Length: 452
Image (cartoon, rainbow, N blue to C red; front, top):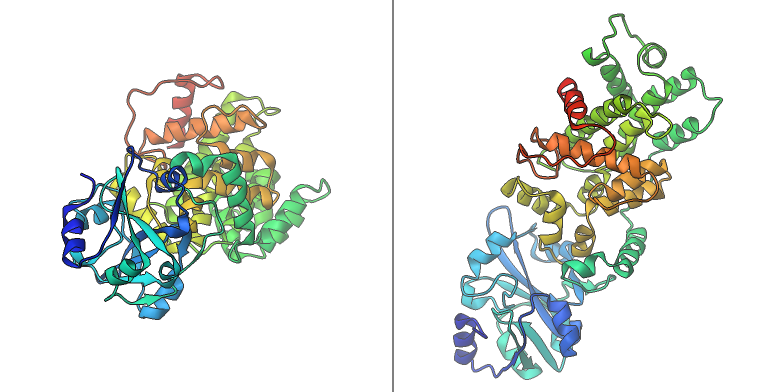
């Protein structure tokens, strides 16, 4: 099949002259354009959207651009979310997934077109197959989209155009994405309380009273620290009436500092509470990982290599990039939540690689929550082990700085997955292949039993 039948019949009925360009099987549109010498600006792609009330819309923009969702919503006075892959496939039954044509009428979809496409001499597009493109000249493009509204609904992308997995992860693209992150006006700064805690932690003259006074500036952080210190896990039977008592009698300076730092850092983000990637799920996973990492580190008993308090902070913040994604890209974050709900046995890292969204957000999300979180933690100057664990907790081959902490957090995720906790896929793994050199399988599961 070179062209979807509904598209071929529609073009013939409308008397739109077109040229078919057959090619070898290729699912990456950006790679195909490069191989065929076609500019991304000349390539029209469809973006499928819907409102909460199930009103659907196709937006057609150049491959080189990103959809300006805010402008589109202001123009149409509606709020939209992106369709996931299953919803898109349900509309385009005669097209191969990923090769949907940017022509809506045969599929009974309303449509809006970016004006920039009409400035071109010739425009290329998918037509339902990964083995061909079709192209139309300017006259026939106007005929094809004659009845559709035209408007400025996209902006030139600031990132390299790439819709294949490899391109999203090569070093050149990563540097470009990090540079683009720096230029985002919404990129959060480290909260003042977190910055103050970092300064105190690095000062050997900071006393327990000094640390307590800083923490007590924020009632919510204070409540979390006190709740943690009073938990049965630590077995303290006396009364705790201050953060200073929590430091000196139960948790210790470094542990309280790390707990407060983790909580304070998360306050930089505006993220929904609910959903598999919401704040509640983030803290559940983070706290389980933190406590398990801390106790495994104690069991390993090599504090000069793996410090228990530092292990706690690494576990607490290793998924920090999930919060950053939710903060920067709320629409796409809702789609990620939807996909995680649909495929609970798939790792979030894999879903990020496969999810289809529009424009620059595609590159950020395919970069992954691991790289995004590690980048921000490093930018905020959190301890090296913490940012490295965020960067590499999905990289089984990592052997660089703080490798022992990375292996520890990977081990925690592997163990918690057997309890259905975490983002590595919630399927219980009864046939776990033990690879850790840090601790024996029996000792690790013994610690897991005590923690959970």
